[in-house]
Image 1 (cartoon, helix red, strand yellow):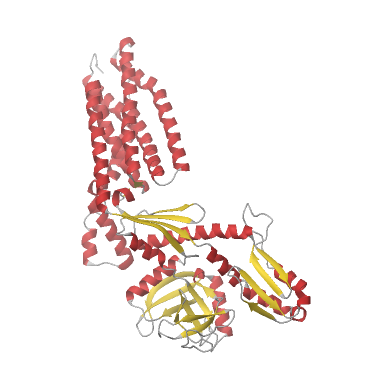
Image 2 (image 1 turned 90 degrees about the horizontal axis):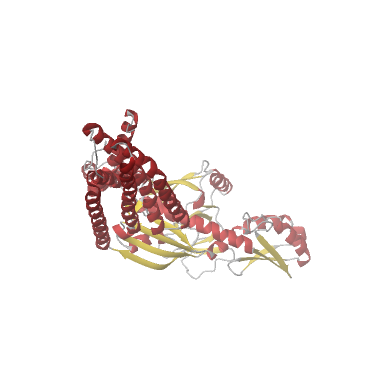
Length: 554
């Protein structure tokens, strides 16, 4: 018979109230968004009267999680980039010169003197003065080979070492190139994500496309040019030994294994530095804007244990020698090492403004992109177009909603009205769940919500039609309602479980808009089953307990 225990009633209404409470901020979207932006800004830069005023736009005790709007609804920037993965080969090969040089020097009696030779960017060519020692040289250099750590590269080495005459050649193996490409893409994805998140934008879409492309979509950003400015800055920090005296000859020959880099502080001055860095920005653990001893803007940094050890060892062994701090192929400072610098911390000084030191610290924390990016496609979606999409989505939802509400009341009378109330709660629960998980709503997501509205009504139709059938045979309305819910349950679950499986597959296999559709569809299925089975039933039970009708019409 019709009976729902008190504890179940409390749980059902509590879940509905909680879902609607979580969805409430979306009804005041601009105010809550202003409040959230102010809270983030205060955490980063401290309190100001303007930020405190913005923060007070929404009470702190109220939930402030919003459904994030996607690029097609909010407007923003869209970039399709291609990663120049070949650049990493050159860096890897250059980094191998120092250990190879040290090993071959220990075999000087056999191989003679060694000299680095010019060659392609992805090859390391070394001339030995005693060609008869080539076999030993190959054996020594091959001892540096490491196994390729990928499923497709099992049993392969990361380098190929060959010798012809007096020239020893080292290059990356094909398996290692493939593994390097994959690592480069993963690192680029993570660094791009960190850089975009540091700027404070909301829910960016950053996805790998194909073997060497990355799609970046940032809702709410003013233009694609702003996004390019964030991504184009390499922020590659290196600490390199200075070789010889500075020069003002831009065409001076740095020598093999060295390079000529311009000075930032003195225009027209060039430093000759070793191509291989002692420590790089990849070994930084933190970078913060600060001030130097003369109260000028600077950036303080700290290395990880590996970088701290290398930095400390080098400064201990080279006291009195100049040391170049290189940022993006420019020498920003070349101080002389006065003493051993243990601990792995230091400060970068230069002609910075406060804004420049802050921006540099952000970029160094995010890390340097392992390879350059080529912009293949850029697009700016204006907020007006996004607003048009929101208006169109609202209109679609309102029309669908109104048509369903009218249909249910005309078809099922009072029971249809109960279904309409449950439908309103259902939509509120969807937005509450979307807000709670921080999901991004796109036009396909709105389509998923509209589809959910139809499916939620479908469950109620099954129940009400079953009640109609039971009224013809059951002994009374109470028994008919109870049997109607019991016998319709299997059909409702079958239909919704199969649709939910489809939503899970779409989410797992799809990307971007497809995932947005799958998320709203999946959440809508959960809420529609909940409201159809529990919410409408509890409303009917409460009505029946109060009215005690002898007959009912559905």
